[in-house]
Image (tube, rainbow, N blue to C red):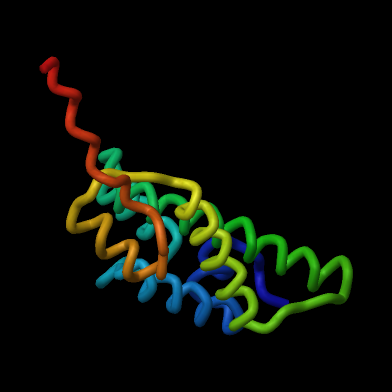
Length: 134
């Protein structure tokens, strides 16, 4: 039996590692550390500012931790399990749904996220010009 830990769940587990790698690719992470402690230190430094990309990365992390933990509990306590692809799709759908309820200013990052997450609406239209007084 493997000792349960964050490190095992995200970096060593043969079931969840492919899910985590797929999410990293989806969010365009490059050269991240391969341990939980290293990853959390890396993320705290890289995602410290409150910008759109960092907000999506934090959303991905919290959503994936939650869903992978649910899967772990379902497997142990209910003898139920989903496929890796199903879990990946559930996580990306949850993130996508959250993004669909968000409206952001137009920017290169917003356009890339709209494309990457296949969002029909996401970017706020430009503001209407003010009425002229004449």
